[in-house]
Image (cartoon, rainbow, N blue to C red):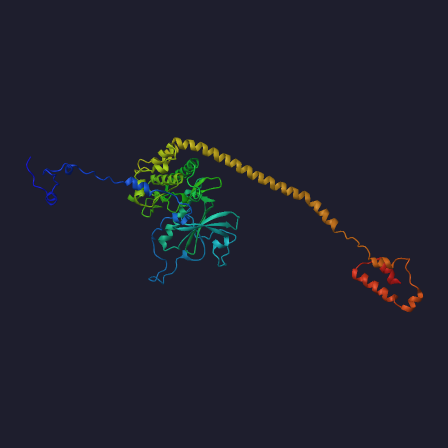
Length: 479
């Protein structure tokens, strides 16, 4: 082999020699290449949920505004838009265009200064605050039922911002009625803010899991089956939810999961995806960063939701943990307690390639979901029977109490009538003594003393103070 000139590194740092002048064998031994411990760092980046954190800790950052203020210093002389007037206007897209009529209510008086929300609803408290609106628990003054009303956080910042916010009403109306979706009642705009009235659910899935830790696998499978039913309905309508997470899943009294908050719903059939916005980054699918929108994104978000409630794991907002979850890595220290079927299902739902993820129909046709469907329907049937039996018992108890009160009413009337009969009180002992025939006055003593009239008047005064009319009193007066 031809001799090569020594490199610059060898000239600067000569190889070590042993005592005989020969090169040491240790200098020829290759050093081990350090292996990056990415998976070890990823394991340390995952942690369990910490109890006691408020709901605001889990809220995503507020998105940037896409509009300008309605009235600015540049256009100070511009006339206000008609939708900024104090009169309420009903919002609906079921016809050819949104209505401009006031919402129907027999309690609303346009002459009063109070808004429609204050006149027709009794505010019971605030349920939560999101990136786009505040949700209140209210009681309708018309029918006495409880509802949830979502009000936009800030007024409309312009015509474009108003159209984007009113689009949520159109999405609600497109969703329609479904047992696993929150029902829409009506919507209106007033004083530059949007109000959306929906049904009220006792709690969200996030609130249900707080303080309980991880849920039993039976409840996790039931939640997964309910949410798959909701996603199947949305996807059949050409809609993508884009924000599936425990805070947007609500529980009814029967523990049925309902998907709500359709503010970020994407309408695939409209074609224009320029206004598409991603939801919470902890549940976001990786392909959304590349601008790829499909039903697989909802499947990924649902898989992250099930991973969180089944393992009580704090999902990372970013970093190595966020990357590893989107590369198909599931931390074994959290998923060890799950069954093999559920782990395999989660691994398929969280596949990094959206083309390899199973669709909603494929998930519902899996063996674990077919088993869950039978138990879920049986459980709901038993719950319906128990609720009907409880309501029947309550109605029977109310009828028995009413019947008992009706039967006791005549006895109460007789008792009150008997107590109202007047009773003549006994005469005074002084009068009885005066009416005694064995007692008489001597005529001579009467003439000397002359106190008979005074005695009579004293007795009459005593009788007058008692307000009684006695025969003896009349006799004394005659004498």
